[in-house]
Length: 153
Image (tube, rainbow, N blue to C red; front, side, top):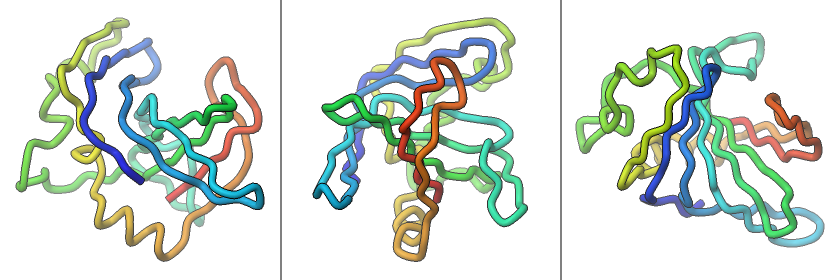
């Protein structure tokens, strides 16, 4: 996975928060060889959509990717409340907290949103090294495209 900073736009459509930008990529290896997916959107779901071993989580960050053929892949990372990142600016601190609590639709441009600030890379690498779940499914919001590769960490 190679993620980084990008110009981004935050959109709230009355149901979910989405951050659009060119955040980097990851590669998935299958029987066809390496397939590269580009990250184009991050979606925050509260509560989490996935359940793991009967446990529900406070939230879920879904990093949406697409390859050159148009196939989508989503990496889902469970979110839990924790102490803010003391090494740098936490991504959520880059946004005004009242934006996340509005019921109105809005769009906001951000000069630089860094996907690395949204995730704990050490924890993510540890999760990937241990195990993750993979399945083919669909998007859970319209247009509900099928054939989406889901990776749940």
